[in-house]
Structures are given as C-alpha cells and as structure tokens.
Length: 420
Image (cartoon, rainbow, N blue to C red; front, side):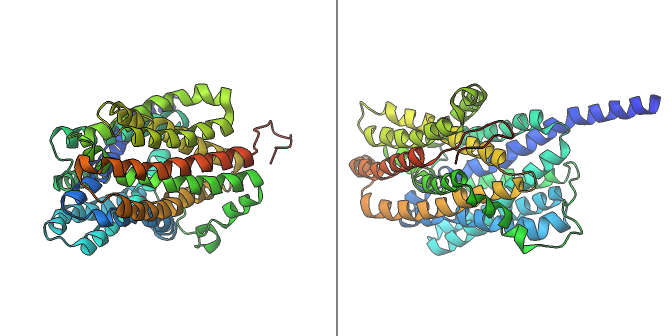
C-alpha cells in the first residue's frame, strides 16, 4: 500500500513538472518560426529579392508534403522523437545562421535552396513536438491545449522582439532564430523519452500514402470539405507571404509587433470556440472562418489611405477568426468523421491538402500576381496593393459560397443516419 502511494505521488510530481517542461518546448518551437517567417518578405524586399518572395514561401508547403514520408519511414520506426527533434533543430540552427550571407551576396537561387533545406528540417518538428507532448501527458485533452498555447505565446514574443528592436527588415532575424533553435536543440535532449511508436513494425506504403484516409472521400460531405479546404488555402497563402511587406509599405515601422496582433487574437478566439461551437455547429463555424478571410482582404484593400489605416489593424486582428474558426474547427470535424484507426491519417490528409497543396498553389499564384501588379515601392505602391488584395478577397468569397451550397453535414447521435 505504501509502495503504491509512493508511486502515485511520484507520478503526480512528474506530471506537475512535465507540463512546464513541455510548455517551454512549445514556446521555443514557435518562437524559432515566428522570429523570421513573418517578416521574411520585408527583408527580401530590402535586398531587391521581391520577385522570389512567392517562391520562398512555397518551400514550406513543399516541405509539408514531404515531411509525413520522413516521419513515417524514419522517425516512427527507428528513433526516439525527442532525439530527432534535437538533431533537426541543431541542423536548422546552422542553416539559419548561414542565411544572412546569402542576402549579402545577393544569391537568390542559393537563398531559396537554403530556405527549402531549413523547412525540410523544421516542418517535421511540428509533429515531433506534438508526439513528445501527447506521449508525456497523462491527461492530454486537458493539458495539451495549455501546452500548445505557449507555442502561440512564443510566436507573439518573437514578433514583439523583432518589431521593438527594429529587426523587421534586418537579416538579424535569422541570427535570433538560429540562437533560439540551438537552445531548443540542446533542451530537446532533456525532454521526456518518447520511443518510436512503430518500432519493429514493417513500413506499409498504404499507411504512408494515407490510403485509408483517402477512402473517406467517398463520403460526400468530407469530399466537399477537403476540396474547399484546399481551395481556401490558395488565397490564404497571400496573407502569409505578403501581409508583412504590405504593412511595411503602409508606413508601419514595427512590422513584427503589428503582425503579432494576429496571434494575440488567435488566443482570444480559441477561448470562444467551445461557446460558439455548441450554438452554431460545424458548418456555420467553418463558414465564418472562410468569410473572415474575405473580410480581412477587404480591410487591407480599403485601408490604404491615412484615414482608413485602422482597417489594416482590424484585418490583422481577424486572424483569430480566420485561423481558429476554419482550421481548428476543420481538425475537430476531421477527427469526428474519421474512425479510430484512421484519425492520424485523416489529419495528415487535411494538412497535405491545406498547408501542402493549397498553400503551394497559393504561394505561386500570389507571387505571380504580386510581381505583375505591385511594381512600385513604399506608399507610392499602395494603390497597386489595393488591386492586389481584391483578388484573394473575391477568391475567398467564391469558395465560401461554394462551401455553403455544397457542404451538407449534420452531427447526429450514434446510430442515426448523417446527411451527406
């Protein structure tokens, strides 16, 4: 009896310490990304590389497409997650440290390759950090949202530091990210041991290709959702690649700090999800998310004058609704319609079509539009920016309309037949 009590006490103590340890992991994980990713386009513009901003932001989606294969073939079967996390961030720190040299030498093609190499290292770490957290938490449903919230805090703090120190248009953002990545690499070796979940099991191509999840597309409502999720990710890419350069052109000097308002609102709207979800349901929550993208780009288009500059702030603050009400609800919906054996594959499928295919297409289209339409610099280019933002605005509106008239899903108790 005494032994059991001691064991229970030890487990309780371990659990108390594991949450702050994992929270620090998440903080650093997204601090690294937020330190350089948001204002990359601003730095590229300063060094005369605006023509390849779209290509630079295409590297992440390509890495997102490839990373499930890396995880499935290597990590899940051979190595502990925390060790792979450490090695990838260590290599990533080296690549980030090298990046300023490519700007100084004006090597556009070399810069794209090194960014792509870094994203190949970074994108798998998102899933790896989740693996470490879920494996270590005894009550993941309650504890993981707290742990994950520190990732958003990390992104916010990175933006505030970059903005307040005047680094928004400086290659120092890569040095800051490199140092943070090195710290996280060393720290990762101290994280709770997370063994390879599929150790000893054969590699099945069916699992790597998410074949069981693709079978879910036979359900009409899920097929419509996946198609619309991919399509809405196309105009979404314009925000990630060009919002920061637009904010800089509009005269904001603290670009990193202004852009961090989006992540602040993300935390706020995350708290509203349980309250609104029960009242609006999946379809209307997803609709609000899609329409928020339309409204955001309208705000950007109308906010180019000095009197209407507040609209740019509002457009950025709408990020909470844009992301939480579509992507978070989308992950919840996917989890609900997938069977227990397919949940992981289904989530990977959604990431593949949104952050992968959709964002890749969107980065290329927005890059082509930007290169054709925004030829001026600074405030003189704001009328051109206005025309640019109308394209993703009406694109998002059209996709929202398509979703509204074709998506038919009703969450019903077990045993009843669903619509769609």
